[in-house]
Image: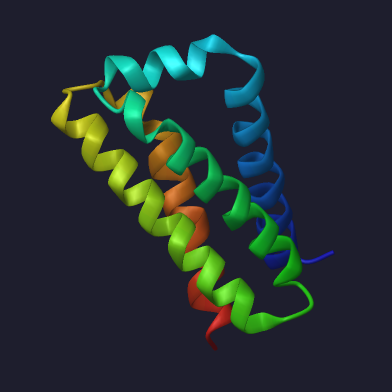
Length: 112
């Protein structure tokens, strides 16, 4: 398996995990509340779930991979902006930065 496909799997599984974690753990809802985004929780989780689904289905239909990786990168960019606005440390912001870079990489490779 090549690096590109590993990146796709990491992204897809991670966003599925984040989606399910939101449903079973109050910790994620508490974090969104701390950031002043509790009313957007469902939108964020649905976006993550749809993005993860699109990433996996994109293995078979490239236009869906292009769209999903771009949307997940955009979601993580917004997450990074929220973290910066709330003056979170780099350590706390690192996951959003990592997934932003990961999905940008998937997007760039998938459009070539």
